[in-house]
Image 1 (cartoon, helix red, strand yellow):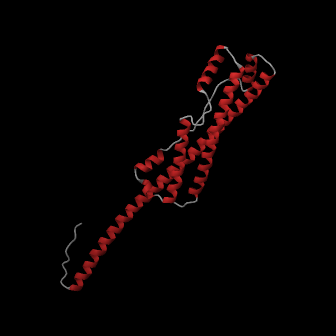
Image 2 (tube, helix red, strand yellow):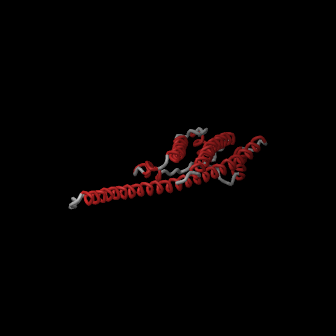
Image 3 (tube, rainbow, N blue to C red):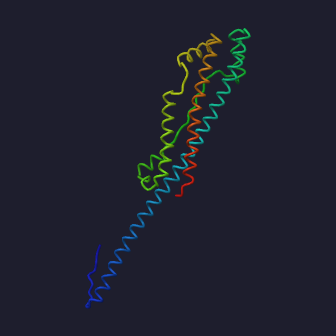
Length: 223
């Protein structure tokens, strides 16, 4: 910073010019600090906006998957009900299974759904240090949501909610395709599939509840 030396001839003039220089320096520093603080606030607000949108989208995704899984639960439950009645009625295996498949919508298969969780907004905010300027209380609610979404994904990826014997399921489907139908084996597979879907949905509903609660709390905080 260039400072021009006062050329005053009296002490009064010198003091006046000196004060003006000091005030100018303080003003410049204050403006610089104000600009810096403005950029900090802008970065924080942008991070909050992006993270809030991402979390809302993740909640919508979780709810969509819960709905899809519930449809599978209803379908397999209906097939189980029909198949069990046919077995008890003494119907032949092929007929018993065929009637159950028709009652369940005409298709014998397993559809497993899990949410696709996004975390790009959070990762970007961490990388550019925008979270440094976000209040601690809001960060706690954000961290709680992302941590639970991560843990849920890991459990689902590791089949932590699965009650299925995948070898048995594969063998049963292969036998079905070959026309070698065992109604009791199909019933056991349907039971495993239903239990897995129910356990998955139970976990996702717990996640949904947490996301709703945490997002309601952050909505009450002022930016």
